Image 1 (spheres, rainbow, N blue to C red):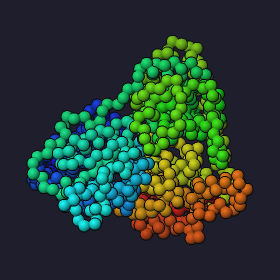
Image 2: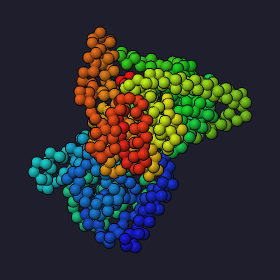
Image 3: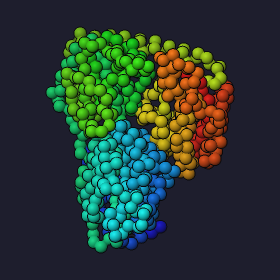
Amino acid sequence: MTAKQEVAKTARAMLKWGDRVSRMARCFNSADVPSKMRNAPMSRTDDKLRGWQSDIIVDLIQRYGFEYITLNPGASFRGLHDSLVNYGQNDPPMMLCNHEEIAVQIAHGYAKASGKPMAVILHNLVGMLHATMAIYYAYLDRVPVFIMGATGPMDEGKRRPHIDWTHTALVQGNAIRDYVKWDYQPTSIDGVPESFARAYSIMTTQPQGPVYMCYDAALQEAKLTREIPLPPAHAVATPSPMMPDPRAIEQIADKLLAADKPLLLPEYVGRREGGFENMVKLAETVGAGVWDICNALNFPNRHPLSVSMDKEAMRGVDVVLGLDVKDFEKATYELNSTTREIKPVVSETAEWLEMGFAEVNISKWAMDYCRMQPCSVRALGDTSLGIPALIEACEKRIAGNPELAAKIAARKVQIGKRHDATWAKWQEDAKKDWDAAPMTTARLALEIWDVIKDEDWVLTANTMKHQVRKLWDFEKPYRHPGIELGTSTQIGMSIGVALAHKKQKRIVVDIQPDGDLMFDAGALWVAAKYEVPMLIVMYNNRAYYNDWEHQIRMARLRGTDEKKAHIGMDLFGPEPDFGALARSMGVYGEGPIEDPKDVRPALLRALEVVKSGKPALIDTVTRHR
């Protein structure tokens, strides 16, 4: 290695460390220039000048500090690919994925777990269309993913017969425009740096979400004939966070403290640096119960003020404060899944308050904004700033008011007693049918917990219908980046979560539904190839049982044959052998395990594999219910 290379390597390491220390929200310091943002070099460490326009894109990828790039190969970005390998020296490293959907899912999980966006490259029109569902879920989940696509050439004279025509669209971003925060297709190399910087800024501004940049194949492959400056090193990458109106915060403080039974309802608060801790302090300051909606880990589930999954605790609530909430309804209403009828659990006389971004970045196409909840106060802004200000406002009112302080203290004792009784009941319920085979989901949850509880662990996505939230101790903010978003999302996202925690050598657990893995089984190969350590425990009920339950409901409602509900839903005859599937992909695999007594020894063997730095899969068969 030359002296120049040594200096460059050291500089990159120092910049990477400074980036981690200085940025808020786990990655981004909105008020400062990113530590990794640096002046465009006129030459690389091998003294070769930038020769191709795609080299400019590589400079931007490196400047903005992306640590990985996921992709599935495609000729439309062959120019960029060559620049990444030979000009950029595969820094950041590319991760080959078996499907574009997996590539986006890995970036999704990584961003949720680390707060840092990943870059994804999608092959022209067809690759983008493969990835649409994963992009939509990243949008729903408010996750920053920097997607780069390719098209063309847009110059018809440079298109190859047939293939360059069928793989090109006008305008390509139209296909996903309704569920990305922004898309752009620069027409020349001069438009690349500015649009890249704008895309990064839009992506990382709250509420965050995916962006799509489309680069013409001919633009990438053209020679660079002049210097193209990058954004200046002093440029701020992301605007500072939005502070809610101080007057609204004062009103919220008054209403919370005047309440007899307030409830805090956080959804995305835990995604921000300090959000988890801020929620604890706010709840303890005002003496309020907390229902964690679980799209992030917002509050410790064993805290005495946690009332999550106990809807009876909502009875009598007179003030509800939603904190960065998109869906007020699911947590606070009861649903009859057969008739679709809903009824409120919270009293109709309760007052509703809001702090967050519910009305920002609403799609004109997808109805992910959910039903609107009328609120008497709506403070638009970032909870990372708003909650500390609210705590301060409440503390000022409580100080010197012994009667209010006593009221809050008594309320905390009452909520704590209910929490402890509910928790004890959950533990008792988990022992029912303990020796049943196939095992109950509660037993599987406890078997996994017993093996990992003394490790530094992380749960990736699935919570087995929230069973693990009733049995495990989620006491640190990184324990769980949030629940899954639907079928064909979890294995890819889980690999991304595991990748985010790889350097810390945490034990990352993916409770993996069988139907979900059947969509993207090739993702196991990605985990093996890049040695992403994770403990995959199959939640295998040999069915797409969520829909099976719906067919049972329909049969009961209509008086039809309930025994036929499995048709078109079951995953048996033949039963997939997930242990063998894992081994075929280079992943340690065992199972299927139907006797619950065999689960713990298998988990212990798999844990040793994970500790060695590799993925392992244990196929455990559970009951349907």
